[in-house]
Length: 607
Ligand SMILES: C[S@@+](CC[C@H](N)C(=O)[O-])C[C@H]1O[C@@H](n2cnc3c(N)ncnc32)[C@H](O)[C@@H]1O
Image (cartoon, rainbow, N blue to C red; front, side, top):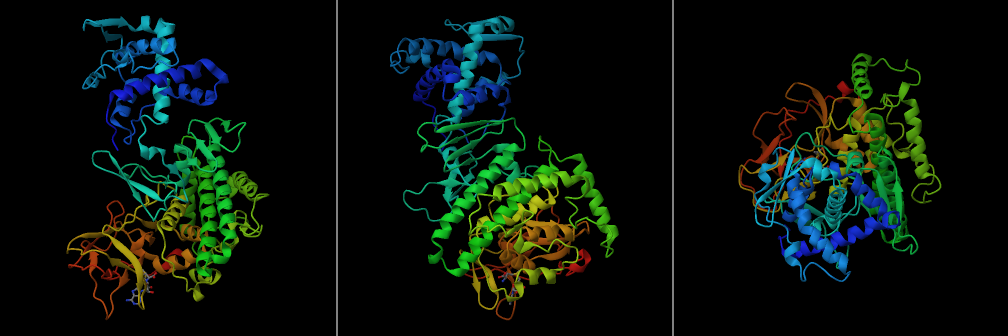
């Protein structure tokens, strides 16, 4: 997908310059006025060179970057001056005839190395090939030059945001729910787009937004909130574009008079709010659509859809509420919040069984004391979303209580133990062992990150599984769900890593986590999660939030064939690695020995 650099690209750029120039001249009358305003305002913010762009895209971006010597830009502008002249003479003219030479970009390959040259002087190449040195001030004083420079910048930016520089992949719609493709970035930065499920002819390709664009190192953790806030999002029906710098528009082609609706607001957490609203609306619309075909959906599947929709809303709500409370507008965790967390932890340590003397205080401690005002704000926000618009089936006004699904109520109390949670969620009769899909695993991870906060989270919000070999999840007679190989796996192959193992340091967090999830997930997690000590002897509740939770243990029908090569205590900074302990043939179940790591001590967490 790396685009070739062709002369056609240059011609296109000329035409684009012309188009943009016209739009600029139209000023406020331009349909794109707010967008051009946004591009103008954001000129100095462009520092990142996105890896997904084409070679020429990256090179052009380098050209307009304020970090590069301006000589490159001015040289280019000289070249494009002719282009402008030619275009201005006739609307029909274009750079491919007859002025192609003038429109050609100078060969700048390998000239970018002198980026840090003395900026007091600027140089350009004269027709005879000699180097002309300009005084920077002289250039600065030339209004015309400045206007051209600006126009050129805008043209590039504009083009980048449209079709020329952005590879196909960037044009695929984003969607949190209905995505059907994913990408992998190859070593040469080209991109492979993979269908995640069967895609029918004519169906729109949609990719998810919550994914790391390159290798996720430890410092880069995306949450639903941070992605919405920092990267914006594009939704369909109608198309909704949200830019992190505070301009958004919705495009609705069915509105013939005003297909583009502009929204301008300063960059705030407001971005999250509007996306949350839009997102909830879409979920409701979708739920409404699903409702219409209710009769044809088997009960078990219906139950899953129902629970899943609730869970998504709930997890998002938790996530947004968390962002309001935890982060300032720059995305940094608030000092007060850090302190509060520390105090909470200390208090929990001291409290032991001694509860109930704190009046109004809730177990999770997150919305207490001076956080009250904020709490009301979140509730109002959420109620607003729910009120008036709620679909009768989807929420009959009783399925939420203070923004929390009622099917989860009661479980945030300190007196609520694992057995109570299981009772409340109907787990004793639990028969619904669904095979979770990728989104459901991601949902659990995002709820986890929202609850413990991105800094403490031991999990990145990525869409892949911790499984490192091709696998399928199926049913293993007498053992429930299990993980099966689909290809031969040679002895010693890395099979799974604990990159999605969520660690909770407190019982409170674990209760909160469960509260955000639907019954069927909670019932599963109650089976899967365990207590253990990490390499520093910190006691934690661990939940493997991917197919690692589905490994069964050996019995008289099966020996174990996968296991760790190192100790049993997990070092979350270096993931636990599980290998094939012998040659495994395709179709065999992957079976492990549940290790001695399990301290089996939920009581230590008041659970
Ligand atoms: C970590 S989970 C494994 C996934 C589980 N099969 C499921 O469907 O959720 C552990 C649970 O799986 C079941 N299990 C695992 N190995 C088993 C075995 N050899 N025989 C019977 N049940 C087994 C037990 O119910 C156990 O509590």
